[in-house]
Image 1 (cartoon, rainbow, N blue to C red):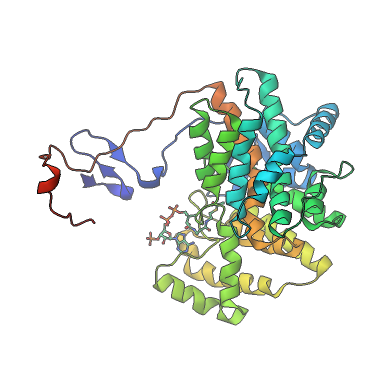
Image 2 (image 1 turned 90 degrees about the vertical axis):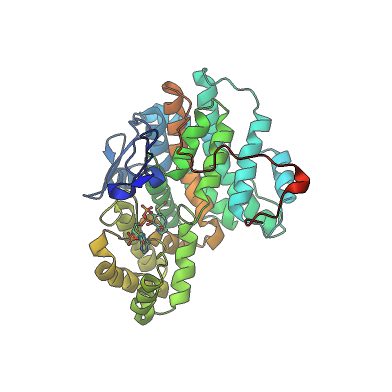
Length: 396
Ligand code: ACO
């Protein structure tokens, strides 16, 4: 084994080259999302994300991601209506959620509930466009209902039913908070969903595509992606950012915190991205959305801490190309909207299900099962010995 430039490892016997984290290794072709990490540009199906976030709804963006074109008025009305009709979840799913431990993480509850849909819709006909459409509608419709249901169930309450007169985002906030949200809050939440809807071959989307490539059902595809999104290096970072800002406490302590984190080689949550060498364009928009919320509903002092940390990080981490990512300001937006901290990542999943389903559909269109190779680093040709002759090994 010999290390080469860029952290690659070359296997001498086979000549195979291993790149940890598959950095820079294209694992698929895709026409869904494009990122220019040097310029900080992000587009879905060729449309800049800031344009979509300013002019479209989340369901309109979902339609674009999954079917490749923006819907016309009739297509959008039909899609919205179908989604609205499928928002309810079976009482069996709700009963199952009532058996979950109330102190369990909502991402685990979501992963289990998403997987359970495969039991209720067990027909698997992935060659049938109607099956694909129905599965998309069901998942887009039911994931928010399941997130809101677990929130009420763990508080010892019964989930409330979706309201047909409310649009997608307003209905989710209503089911979660049990009161009709302010229209500005709903619109800002909808824009957050657009910003989180898709981001090329990130860890959870890769997980979704690998699962999809086995031709399993879309509920298993989404459940595997939810499990991957939950990790603190991926979607789970939004929750950890607020814990970090809490720990820092006040803006004047941000620079010292950063110095200590760098000195002890601890990652600063909400910073850094494999793709971007500049500030994540979504973080730029989320920061503006946070300011819009603060102007309307009151300032949050945690924002001052965040800005002080960003300023300090620009000096210390900026030269390495490490800047705020999507998770840095999203938590401040969600906190102002009244969303509990451990629901930040499930909210991310509500949005990202659109991207996962777009990749599911794309994967099915030109499928070949994922089966990469590995470089074996274990022992070879060892001598077997009978049980009674074996000494305790160093690893136990
Ligand atoms: N804080 C401090 N240093 C960092 C950070 C950070 N947040 N991110 C990267 N670095 C440094 C590393 O220490 C490393 O430095 P070195 O070369 O001196 O050893 C270098 O930058 C490269 O870091 P890697 O971890 O190898 O970068 P990678 O591309 O593998 O990881 C990741 C990207 C996981 C996002 C990383 O930046 C990180 O852990 N960030 C914090 C967690 C986070 O915010 N995750 C959310 C990402 S966005 C999303 O998934 C939705």
